[in-house]
Amino acid sequence: MLDYDVIVIGGGLGGISSGALLARQGRRVLVLEQSSQVGGCCSTFEKDGFHFDVGASIIEIIQPIEKVFKMLGTTLQKEMDLISCDPIMSFLFENGQNITYPLSVEKTGEMIRRISPEDGSRWAEFCAFSQDLMDVTLDTFFSEPASTLQDMAALIKKNPRFMKFLPVFMTSYQSVLEKFFKNETVLKTMSYQAFYFGLPPSLVPGPYAMVPYTEHEGIYYPKGGMIQIPLALQRLGEKFGMELRLNSHVTRVIIEKQRVKGVRLSDGTTITCKQVVSNINARTLYLKLIGAEYLPSMALRGLRSYEYSISVPMVYIGLDYEPPLEAHHSIFAASPEDMNRHYFEYIRKGKLAKKNFGLVCWSTHTDPSLAPSGHHILNVIPEGGYYLRDTTWDEEKPHFIERTIENLSKKAIPGLKDHVVAADCVTPLDFERRLMLPEGAIYSFQQDLPAQAVFRPSARSKVISGLYLAGSSTHPGGGVPTTIASGMIAAGLISKYES
Amino acid sequence: MRNHSHFPWFSLIMIGAVVSIIWWRLLPEHKKEFYRNLARQAPDLPGRYMI
Image (tube, rainbow over all chains, first blue to last red; front, side, top):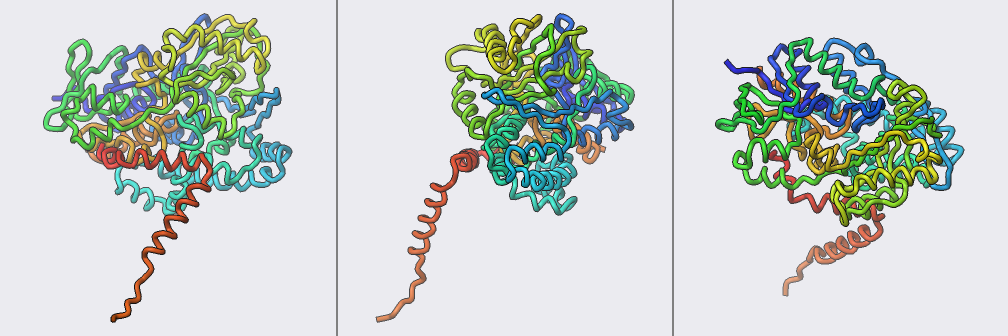
């Protein structure tokens, strides 16, 4: 008798959600996580009394997450204390001006109208377009397999209105945005969200331009930190019999006659199973844990051809005062062209920007319990490439923390440097080493059109029987709701094909 | 001598080429970047479909 029905490699959001759902189906499931806690990028660590989120900083587009919790027989709201963020976002302009958007769609429209009456009148049109796109794609593209042409046909069959939005995939985020908005100030409040997909606005596929609207559908933060999401999934999975082993590093997926038979751990232990769900990067899985010899040459070429999305160095700052910010997320306002320039001129060329760029997350604005009384937390995401032209991330790290704090103190958050009581940084190299994310790419492979849907590594392996993929390197890609959706898709496929 | 009425293929191809060049030149840089990125990765798509 085999040791387990399913072994899940990696306790990130995709792995832990598929593990919980498969346990709910009555399967004997073992989740193997190489680190000391679940969640991967969606987790929280403690330093000097401050609870910093590792990577993910909010939940938005909540529907796929709610669906998974419903499939587990509960609700997201029952399993954690979700705090709604309002205002949703503040934009810091170089001239010292701030624009802060509230949750309300109508009030945001009024604010945009004050900046540009023409763009204000188009806001309602943009919202209607985005709402329609969101309704259709959440029901299809973001919750169903999309690995084969048959899958795509099934999506269209499920909701024929998906056809209407297919041409939008052939345009970019920037094109969609600029179709609705012309004013540069307005565009500067809607461009950064392209980086949520690891690419600049000129390369992100058009449908993702709905995000500046979907944020107004609700942005939430789980009380206690982002780790509450994977912890809730772990708890539910264990309720259904799922086993979790932490600090368990898988070194090999055992294959016989192109079918998975089990896994081998770094201590030499072999564990047998019927199916494997891999939540680690697809290239690492196929090339290091399985071996290139099992892949047809064309598939191997395809696998090697993927490029990685941007890396994200994170700076974690503990403060002994309340920073003069206005929202959970503050973003340095940047036009689509600023974003493209930053990507092509800095990130791709291995240069670090000298001025403020990126996102500042003020998590204690939403949940003060994350820091000691009277203290606050800022997670700063200045954006940067994996390769640095003149140095390495290990050498750069201490200077990077210092320079980030110095830059923020100059204009954006005056006085900040005098109130720093704790600081840390996770560089792209750290992400690579600690979370097994190649090139520190938290969104995994690029999420441009040639790496979407049928051109992304298949959730049900096309070369190895019994092998399923979850996580950011498979469909629908990186991000909190999408990786959870990938776990749901993998569990659904196993239920369909492995009775 | 036979009188052939040739369909003007050559003219059509030339007009098509000129229109394509003008269309490309008039495209904003970000749209060119989008299509360049697509074209650059096009040879990898059959392999990606197989994995």
